[in-house]
Amino acid sequence: MLVIITRWLVITAVILLSSMFIPGIRIDSLSTAVIAAALLGIINIFIRPVLIILTLPLNILTLGFFTFIINAFLLKLVSYFVSGFEIESFMAALLCALLISIVNWVANYFIVNTNKPQKPDYIDLEKGKDDKWQ
Image 1 (cartoon, helix red, strand yellow):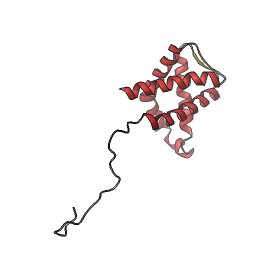
Image 2 (cartoon, rainbow, N blue to C red):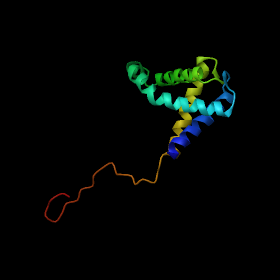
Image 3 (tube, rainbow, N blue to C red):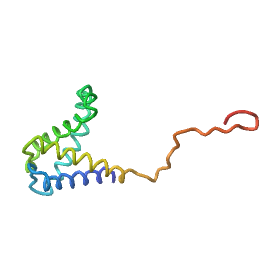
Image 4 (tube, rainbow, N blue to C red):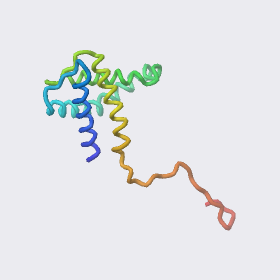
């Protein structure tokens, strides 16, 4: 549960920062950014996988770069539903999607639980006294 809240706060911070640095993105308040991040998370859970599967051939041809266009489209969709969160152009949405992807990639490195014992990628066999591998 803490991981979900942390990721939500990270996306909220990125949306706020993108409104400061990317022209064409406007957010009225902190609560608007929190609602936009929550809605983006819900849309990413339900709609994004369907879009990824439907555009899989195009995504393969572009070596995965079409995923950024899907993310930008989903950001524009969120801005349509959340009042106070406006994205003026598709290019602004694309830059914001790129920024969100980069920050999420870096944040996942720190958010992932590292207390779990890691399993090795191989099986270590030893020959026993009775010439059987164990």
